[in-house]
Length: 239
Image 1 (cartoon, rainbow, N blue to C red):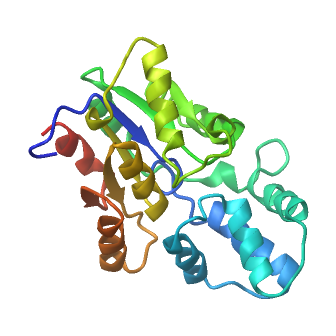
Image 2 (image 1 turned 135 degrees about the vertical axis):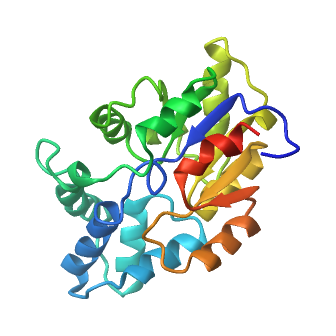
Image 3 (image 1 turned 90 degrees about the horizontal axis):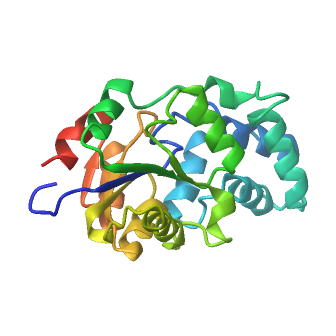
């Protein structure tokens, strides 16, 4: 990142950054909404809610969409229906079909110089760790700040990234926020990074239809750089 200090810590969101969730989380949202409302949800609706901000939690997003149609359904029922689809029985749901959005060779390049790396995600910890293990990414991401470690202060609150930096400090790897970068795909990710004093790289996953509009929105919310190819990341952070 030109003109900036060295990147000593690199944090990633998981959904839409490390893994393609277009046919997993987003499919679970669509099918759960249809179950309770009887209406098929256009995929553009999900992105519209996410672009507003404040909908980082897909369970709450699903519940909000259902509620906004005039249906009164308890959140707990929505979560149960969602998880039956997404996690399934014995991890055989949509989660098992998620493709990676980053190549192992790219992770090797990012990891080669010894910089700290981690995942900061709104996923439940069990699902985040299962995915990391599924792709054999544990050596790249020893640090995971998932939902349970965020003390109910979820993105766009800066706490998740502040917690990640605090965990590095406790492990003897103190990193100043200006030397850390967060890679995310949403306006909440960019806002979280900006409030935490961490540099932000916006990523546009392949399933986003209007890439120019999304890039503009990510820049507006604080992205220093926006990319649509994770293979460009090593050259970018090593500048």
